[in-house]
Length: 238
Image (cartoon, rainbow, N blue to C red; front, side, top):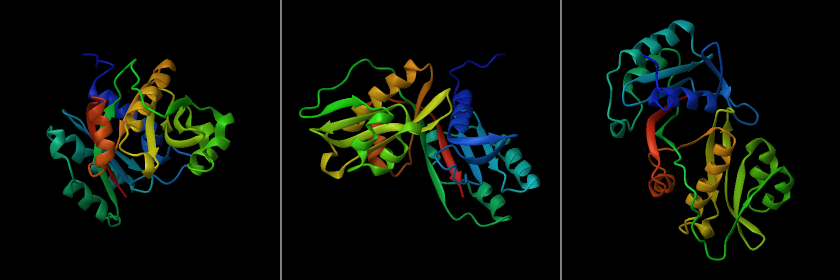
């Protein structure tokens, strides 16, 4: 039976290819500017399976063992996956201790044609030629805006006060990255920017994806406000 294009398993695999550089089935780098080192193991829990990807830093026999462990896992309620699985951490610890982990949900941003009114705020699509506008408040965006297209920003007068850009991009899918100045949080800027950004991604024929960590309450709030569809929980083990 052919798996539907919208299946959670296909979305999980698509996200993995978007987040990471993968060669011969192994993670070689984070798919970001400068290609930082990836986690030693990336797990994607969907409603029906657990998929595992391991970095080239993990010995081949241990990688095989982690893949077998993942394949043997029963389906889990996504809301219950809130911490790294002990057995995966134990397997990795035979190579080196797990020093850092990140766990959180992964979503697809829904299609929307609406855009909320934001008094005193202007939303703009921002190409590479606008890099200088970000220098004062979001210098890291100014330095990498050409690699983070599409990028949309919220302006309070001439000042960029919030941004949503493509944190990762595989061509077939894009991952949103958002940031808002402390002075402008709680005003609905992030949901408005993510909605606008997602429309641009869809216009490119790609999927707009969004992921976060369970303890990032502000980011989870954006997902709830936009009615995002959760398809997985990500576990990153370093």
